[in-house]
Amino acid sequence: MTGTSRDSEITAEKKKASIYLGRMMQDTTLEEDRYSLDRRGIKEETLVVELKTVGPYKAFKLGFPFEYLRLTENPEFWPQGAIIRQFRNNSRTGCKHRGASVDADM
Image (cartoon, rainbow, N blue to C red):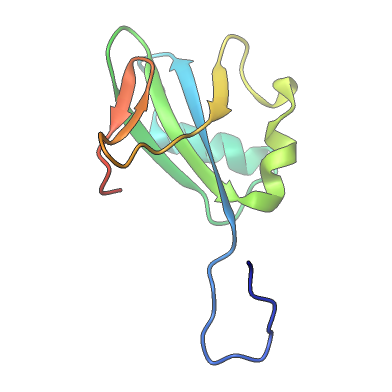
């Protein structure tokens, strides 16, 4: 169930989408990822977290308002060769993706 009342003393956070962005070059920075999202139209409430990786590439968790998810589903949105998929949080062992992980206390 999702609340619908607009007349409340408390407020809820907007629904967020989280995706995994992998196979990025080692010189890719958090700031570059944020700028890339901003330049492509996702200008508000973005979260970019670098994941620990094994191997020569970097990976990131990207979070943004859910309303932008459809925009990011277009392969033309991303650099050639990048891997994009839904970010799944495994609370038992931390967030894990093939070759990448981030601590669960994020």
